[in-house]
Length: 275
Image (cartoon, rainbow, N blue to C red; front, side, top):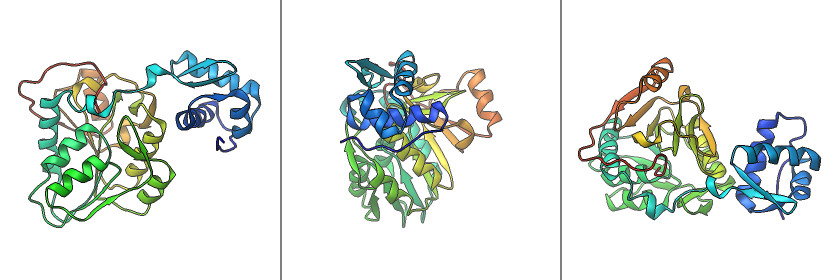
């Protein structure tokens, strides 16, 4: 059974966001099922699905639809071997943001996983993460005050997502959040391929005093499936190359601290593949 919430009377973009969330959770769904769960007519659902299909976000067939294959992502094991020099440089630069005694939130992702491998030597750190991989690396480095959010285990990102994870996050207050992104865009901000993961990232941002984004140069200009933050909602971006003039201006206008890490022997790769 598909669970949803009534969205009658809301703006089309918000209704379409909820529609995408339902499809991400349940796979294929009929127009009738979606109309019942959204509390709107099938005509409205068909119109929304047509708009989403035009954006390449859904595929429609046989009286219903599903999230488009093109909007899906690489497996975690594939993503973590991409842009290794860049991720290492970004992780080492991110260490300068950490001080002993902090409560640190770390969102799931391969760049944040590399960061977790390098966090060592600090005293009295407390961690909150929705990534078993991140928690494992922190434990290897001798840390014990590690809180996992719980929730639904999602592949291919190996992230814990969903209402249980979001509820756990809302009970915490972090000094700093480290979060990755599959896409960074001047107009559309930070994005990720999954609706549920976007919601968890957003929840973490709302509970952090400082938000630091870890993203290499291949993410610039990329728009992934779901936006979870505008540029003016983050405090710092740690990347491996100086962005173009438009991007640098946008960051400056939003008062975002830009930190460019040195990535020796960096190799180019496909844009937006690794988070």
